[in-house]
Structures are given as structure tokens and as C-alpha cells.
Length: 583
Image 1: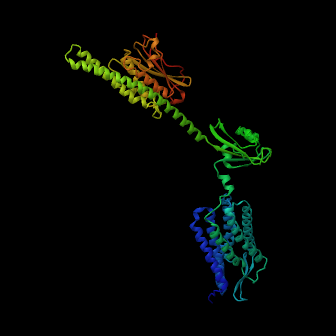
Image 2: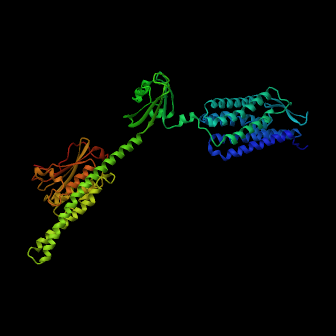
């Protein structure tokens, strides 16, 4: 016997088409979040249920009825779980939907589906077809698991209704319409389920739950069209509270923590224990500024630096009561601003360095232009004399002086090139011994030797440190009459003191500080001045400590924070080394 599509079946099929369209609509917006993804599954389940029941009512024999019953239960069994998931996700409680919870929720539907597909007596004790009336209906005696499954479905619907009703009270106006239509769509099948279980169906063996679902589909359709359901989804306050990267603490009027989000626990460092329930004194041990903020009774802000963790926090507090004399509690916001403060400090240091560099450049450029002008005047004067009489007896002396003036101009041009670079390049870790070897390469001659005794350490320095070494070694050759220079270093407290000694004539006592000033010296007077400027830009100092008549000795003090020792480097010395024997 074939199927007969009656008016009731047509209504149910139309409802199935509507829920199918809602499923397709939600699928197109599944990237909006978990609410929409659960809604897709829910509408697919309802479509199978309603569409299958429409075909069941059109069947004319028990075999056809049982086929469509199995199709229906693909949706009936799963729909309650998807209702719970959809509502929890919509209200921001999807964090509760862990794998163990989902496994427990799907346990009942899985058992139900297995019993129905096999027509197990635990679900249907007897099966039959009620042919009274205008259309045949599936008649059965429920088994014990049928009661379990029916209670589970009703419980899921009541739970969803209760969660939505609670959420409606705190929902923002743009979302209240969504919640209202969702409540309407939920309450209808609840009432139909209760009537069906109580035996209040107007026609025996007629599933009025399936007949109520078209109203649910219409309610959700109104939500989609009128209230932008699935397009405009709320972000639950609980989700914001738990996931916001700013720590939030709520104190009651007695100074006890009554609310604390995970960020607050992480930022304060509660030792792994919860903050809720702790007193103000306990929290104050973690961040000492809390008491002053809370007792003020007015909005307040401060910064707290945690020395132990080297972190900086911005802490603000606002009373929850209307006035300062009302103990309504206080909400405290805590933000980690360590990275911002460090960036600001680094920017301030860099700005100060640039300003200092600009001042030095302005001053030095003035002096350098003056020196260049003087040397050019000298060169022009000697050239004029030579033009008048190229064969004058003093010509060789004039040419030598010209060479000297040109050489000084070349030195000044190198100085103009090097001086602006001081402090511009970022510091790098330089291997001290290798840097000195590069600087000495090419300076020594057959009568001059460099003995590099520097230890295997690295220093955080400007690459111009190599230029400093070259200047000090070159001075020993050109101006000190030395035949040997020795380089060594040893710890002095936290610092490292580097010594460069030679066996030349040394520096007279009155000149030991003046030699580092600009313009002092036998040539241009720029070498040692530039060396000290380079070292000072790195936080290092230089001094000449040799004994006049017994060679020069330059000591460079390097801060401990700029020194990195190798494991094999011996650090038990104290004070600068003596590279050469002294009287």
C-alpha cells in the first residue's frame, strides 16, 4: 500500500522545509561562533524529526511507519543536547561544554538511538498501527528507557528555558528581542511534551510535540528576520570577565575578595591559590598599594612596581556604592604595563642620548670648521709663497709644512666622519682580545711590538671600541717613543679594568687630564678626545695613570653589566693588572 500525503503531513513538511532553510542560513554564518554552529545541528535534528513524522503520518503500513520512526529518531535523540549547547553558548557559558560533559550529555541519546534502531523492548514493549480515524498512527507501549529518554528531553528543554529566562534579565536591549523569541520557541515544545507524556493528546497516538515544532520554527524565523539572530550575537559578561587580559577584583564592604577573574590571579601571583575569600591584608602583601585605594572611597589610580618579579602594574579602584560613606564594595582593575614602561624608559634614554649627541655635534662642528679654515689659510699662504718663487731656498721646508697641513686636514675629515657615529650604532657583544688584535694590526713596525694579554671576555660596546684601541696603541708609537705595548685586564669589584701600557717617555703629571681635551697634543689633539667621547657614550671611563719617564698607562673601566665572562675565565683577581714592570 502506498503513502498518502494528507493536510497534516503537508503542514509538517512545510515546517521541515522552514527549519531546513534555517539550518542552511545558520551554516552560512557558522564562523560567527559556537552558538551558530550548535544551531545548525539543532535545526538539522528538528528537520529530520518533523520531516520524518510527516512521512510517518503518510505511511499506510507498519513497515513504512517503522522506517520513518528510525529516521525521526536521528533528530529526536540528538535535539535535546544541541538545545543545551546552543543556549549555553549563546549566554556565554560554553566553557562548561568540555569533552567529559559533552560525552555525558550524548550518552542518553546514543543509547536511545541504538534501542530504537534495533526496536529493543526496553524502548518499545509492543508495536502496532492504530488505523482508527482519518489516518493511521504508530501505536506502542513504552518501555522503561522510553520514560528515561522522554524525561531527558523534557529536562533539557526546561533547562534551556530557565537559562534563557535568567539571561533575559541582564541582556542588553538589542538582544532582548532575540531572547524573547528563543523563549517562545522553547516554551511551546515544553508544553506539548508535558501534555503528550500526561496523555492529553486530542487524538490517540498522535505526536503533538512534532505538531508544536512548526511554531518553534516560526519563532526562530522571526528572530532571524526581525532581531538579526545569528548576525548579532551577544558577548556574555561572564565570558568577558573570564577572558579579558585585565585583572578584575571585587571587594565587599568588609574588604574581602568576592570576585576575581583568571587574569587577576595571574597578574597578582597568588601562589596558585584562589583569590576569592582572601582578606584585604592578604592581598596587600602581594600588592601593597591596595589598602590606600580601597579606604579612600573615591575613584583612584596608582602604579605599583613588584621588585621581586620586576613588573609594573597600573591599579585603579572605583567604589560600587553611590557615596563615599556607603560600604557597597570596590572594583579594582589591574593591568600589566611593564612593557609600556620599559619602552617609555628606553625612549627617554634614547631621546636624552640623541639630545646630548646633538649638543656635542653642534659644539664640535663649530670648532672643526674653525680648524679647517685655519689650515686652509696656512695652505693658501704657503702656496702663494711658492708661486712667487718656486726655487726659493726655503721651498723644501714650505712643502713639508704644506704636507703637514694637508695631513691635519685629512685627520679632521676622518674626525668629522667618526664623531657623529658615536652612540648611533646599537651596542654589540665584542670579544675583547680579538677586537684589540684587529686594532693593533698594521700599527706596529719592526721596532714596535704589541703583547696582547687580554682575557677571553666579551663586552657590550659600540663597534667604535676598536678605534679607541687603535688610537691608544698608535699614540704609543708616534708620540711616546715606545718599543712595546702590553694589554691586560682584571676584575675590580663588579667592574673590569683594562690597562694599556707602553715603555715610552710617559705623560707629565700636569698633562694627565688635559691630554683628553680637544686640541691638546702634538698633532691635531683629536685622538684622545675622540677616544674618551666614545668610551663615555658606553658608560666607560678612561684615565692615564702611568709614571712620567717610565711609559704611559691608560686604564679603561668597564661596568660589570657590560662584561660577559666565559666559564673558563679566572675571576679571582682584584684591581687592574700591571702589564709592565714599574719602578
